[in-house]
Length: 150
Image 1: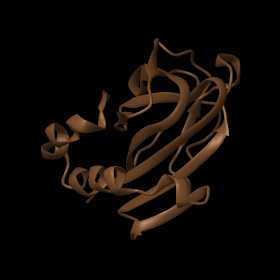
Image 2 (image 1 turned 30 degrees about the horizontal axis):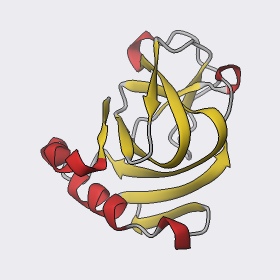
Image 3 (image 1 turned 90 degrees about the vertical axis):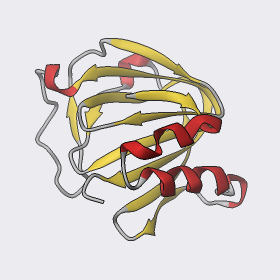
């Protein structure tokens, strides 16, 4: 997991061949003009989801993890924190892995909660179970999915 400001994103481009395109997308994206929902940017290799939704309480959040994609979650506006726990330490799945959605959810409690402030991003690799969208009020964010097999 990585947490940082978008201004520092270039430091992480060497970690994955798709990160340069993902961070460029985040820095150039016209959030105000975009409708909520997911869309492909570079086929299935790179997608973006515009999220405008109410924050949830800690009790409403389930940890989730992905196998085929890295999540880069960028907070545009609001007050968000997310739960985190190593996927390898999650012991109680909340169902089967959903191949079509590339997600498995867990009943486990997060090991820690981290704040995400506007202008910041969090990178979640497959080994990072995460529970986003905790907070109060409305959250506005972008979720970029970068294929592991870029």
